[in-house]
Length: 124
Image (tube, rainbow, N blue to C red; front, side, top):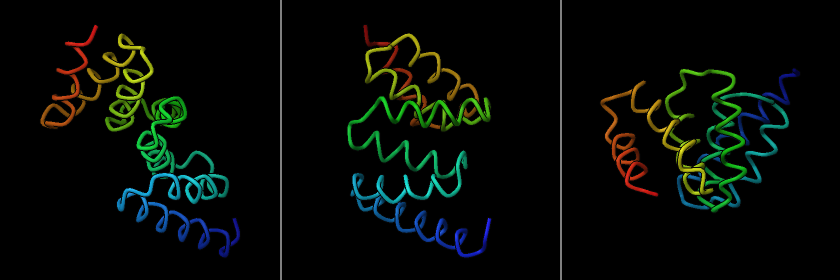
């Protein structure tokens, strides 16, 4: 990849994650989609884009991004967490719980994972 494109992807990622942190998920998703086109499959971009979609309420697209992360790295705890949350929101509680259990197993000291798993286990 040429250096200008890499700088461009880096710039897009920085701007996108800043917008995401400022709760501008829609604007962040636009930049992160462009970034992903320049650096396909990069875990940090997939994660940020999954978070942006999730915050927008587009749980199907969020699940796609987190699923791609899990496929690339089955031990990625945050990917399982995001995928689990997205699946629960999509009404796939059993799949969601499975991924939340995996996240909690991989990182048992993460309180967010434990809370999400407890909530998912109480859901029908």
